[in-house]
Image (cartoon, rainbow, N blue to C red; front, side, top):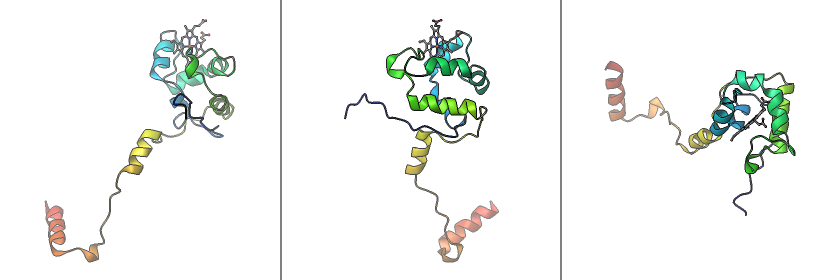
Length: 131
Ligand code: HEM
């Protein structure tokens, strides 16, 4: 497979700023557009500029972001449109894909059954509760 092929992201029907939209803007975008008075790094800024952002990023003629290999896909544009039409929901903080993968790979904590503890484990527990 061609390593340059972008992973096609799905259209999100009910996107929120915290779960989806904020990840559409990279630091380079925030820096360059911040210097031009367009804040792409906060909820308030993206909401305020949403229609201009939509117009400048929509394929096939969107001119932002300027790099050809970073153009928004039709799916991303549709997700952004859904977000505007839903009234710019903020949503709640959810772990990003990297954090999610790390959590899935991490061993979970196992809570032992208190009735099957061995004497040294019971001692350790007693010590801890009195320290
Ligand atoms: C997702 C990323 C980006 C979005 C949504 C975006 C959005 C926009 C918008 C809405 C405008 C019009 C501003 C206005 O009418 O006042 C604009 C203009 C501009 N942006 Fe961006 N931008 C992005 C990334 C970038 C990056 C990475 C650069 C530079 C490397 C950049 C450079 C510019 C420049 C030079 C203009 C003025 C263009 C002109 O007037 O012809 N933008 N951008």
